[in-house]
Each structure stands twice: as structure tokens, then as C-alpha cells.
Length: 444
Image (tube, rainbow, N blue to C red; front, side):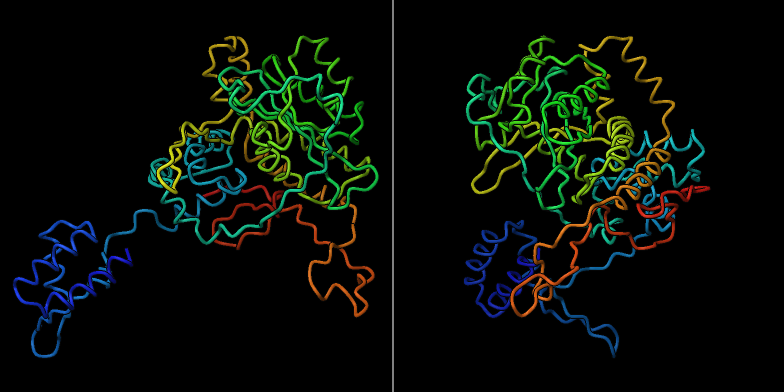
């Protein structure tokens, strides 16, 4: 829009000085360059810089670069923002599209459990709000930390040839039970000795995701964590797909799958997109709730196991996600289309492969869950987990961390980015990621 205003100014100066014949040529050029309607374009070029006298003292000058201020009443006022922010925080800061999709179910559940009290007009506005409006209202609150991923698994060079390859295009994404699995290491940036690992399982068809903590990367602990996560799934596992890391690419895990009639496939080497669904969940679930600090104690393992079970309920029952429908390239741009945001529970209930008995049990369980209570429990466990982090030496983040000889200063510790940065204490915060135990009387 700013470029078009500059264009109007440049053409208007030529247009107003030109002859009648020249104006027609200039107008044709301007219409071709701007895409405006011809009559509207002519009016813009005539009016730009035109002076209109209002009485003796006031002169109005036409300027297309000036934006007209519209004195429309504010539809979504402070009371809407005050109620929206705590729900957004409770749902762990989803994007606007996912938040809008989650609001009806979240508001209904929070009101049912006495966590939320809204006036009728505020409730109606929250239920009719658009993603663009959410982005505008939460714009000042969306300054978040940026974390980088680190791979800690190694490829297996020989056994992998016994496991068939499945590419991204060949993956089954329409029926539940075809899992993608991966590991996330909690080493704090120094992959030395034993430390905790998170086994991530996700179902591309429904986005149902489970995380489970393994004591280390040995085949015994990884397989045990996989079995615990599999036991929480509300459907049968038909197939498992992993990358080429030795934690899954071994004879023991293949035998485990063969004994249970589970198909086992792997990605192509150096092709992360073959395992893209679980790679995304590594960041949005495992890293988001557990962070990047180092954990290597039994106490941290116990806290993580409790966190895993709580995160499973929160993510699968209350957090919507979107699935890519199509991509179309036009020149340098790629246009992507997504489906409507839905929770994994909603996708599972819509699957004809799931029995009515399982659907009824899931629906009854959903009625017993309080999303605000789950959010508070998750944040409490995250705080406990942060206290159990093992300090590691810094990777020289800035020049002040080294002395004149180029050595690390003694005692310099790496920052612990386990928890998100605190939000500004805006009015309406019933609880934030750093004060989850303060149960709100009302979120309104």
C-alpha cells in the first residue's frame, strides 16, 4: 500500500502539469502500474495536492499518502483482551487460528469447572472473534524466545539395510495407527555421559501425540518408554516409522515390532522430511514443555514421567492443530492451504476406523478434564524440572565469557531456557506460565 501511495504522488505531479493529450497517456501508464479502476485513478491524480479552502483560516490539501482515520467504535475492547489473554496462556500460547478453534471447547470446559466467569456480551465476542483480530489484540504479548534444535542421534550403518524405506510420499496419512517415532535428547548442549531422552510418538492421521521419558538411549530403556507411550494410545498401532538412529534401528526393536505384528519402516538417509510429522512434534510438544536444559538424575526422570502423562491429556484433548491440504507454486511464491484447526480428539472421533465404544469412552473422559487445572499442573512440574537441571559449561555465548587467554571464565554457566519468558503483567492475568499455582477466582 505504501508503494502505491508513492506511485500516486509521482504520477500526480506529472499529470497536473501535462496537457490534455499527455494526461491520457500518463493515466494509461498509471492504471497499468497500479491496477486501479480508470475513473478512480483519474480522481486520485486530479485530487492529489489540491487545496480546498474551509472558511478563512483552514486549507485542506489532498494527499493520497495520508491514511484516513475512521472513527469507528471499538468492538473488542479491554474486557475482551482481559479475558482472552489468560485463556491463551492456559492453552500454552497457540497461534491465532488454533486459538480461535480451541476457544469454544476451552470456554465451555472452563465454565463447567468453575474456572471462568464471562459476561454474555464478552462471551459472544470471544466466540465470534477472527484469527486476524486475535493477532492484533495479542500483538504486544507475542515476543517469545527462539530456541534452536540440536540432533544427538547417530545413524546405524549396517542393520538399516534390513528395514524397508518409506518416503514422505508413501506414508499413510488417512488411517490412525501408522506412527512416526523419534528421540529428543535432554543434554543441555553437551552430549556426554547418560542423560534423559524423550521418546515422541505421533499419528499423522489424527495428530494424536504421546511423549515418554527414557532413562538413557539404551535399547532397553527406549523400548520400555515406547511401550509405556503405546499403552496410552486409544487405537492399535499398525506401523512404526523412524529415522536411521541406532536407538530404533536395531535387532531388538525390530523383533519387538515383529512379535506384535507391527510394520517397521525407516526414512531415507539425510531426508528429514520422510519423518516430518514427528520432527514437528519434537519442537511443539517435547521441547516446548521440557526445554533444552540438561537432565540426568532419577528425580528429574520421575518429574518428567508425571509431566508426560499430563501433557498427553492437555495436548490431545484441548490443543487444536492444522494439517496441510495442498501446496501450489506460482513463480517464487508457494501458496499453502490448511484444513480447519481441530484437536486430536476431534479428529479421532471423526475416524470411522475407531469403534463407538472407544469414542464414547474418550468423550466421557473429556468431560472430566479441566484444562486450567492441567495447565497449572504442567507449569508446576516445569518449575520443578527447571530446579533439577544439571548446570553445564557455556558454549562461549559472548566475548565477556572469555578471558584474555581465550579460556572460559570459571563458574560461567549456560542460561536455562527451560521455561518461556514471562509475559508482561497486563490486567486480566489470572495466572501465567510463572505463577500457575495461583488458582484464579475468575479469568474474566
